[in-house]
Image (cartoon, rainbow, N blue to C red; front, side):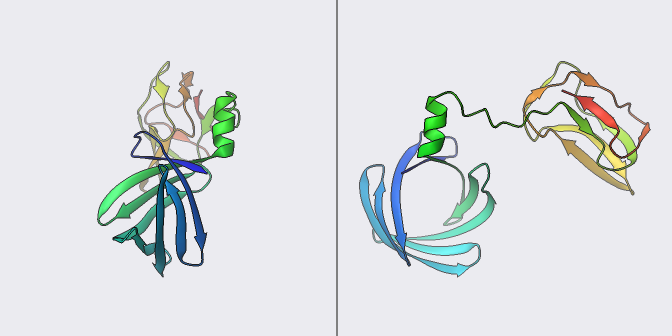
Length: 169
């Protein structure tokens, strides 16, 4: 049994079984059955309850259980949770495995072109923190986790070495 959220909307419960190219099971407690054919590594054709769907897997993060797919030309963000994710959530333990980040260090030597955050600012995972120029390329360093900026150590226009502390959380 899985729970999926599509584009952040109310979760849908699903219990689908795949045997060969045959799909059977339930989707929001409604019986479904169909066939799926692999077109290539990231494209599929699904015939489900006599309706045809062309599916393209655009991006998959199997650790976070998030997918970006295109169905008949329309993009959807999919979040998948299994019974263990639900159990951890119900016990209040779903964030226990969240990565604790204390600082961001320079991944390579370069010049700090711009600092996009300030001390005390709340950031989400993936938010841009600063721009580092290295080998004539601009690299945007992003937040590896949710957190609050404790201290910005880097200075705009100053060169940094690899592994030099830039930002503390």
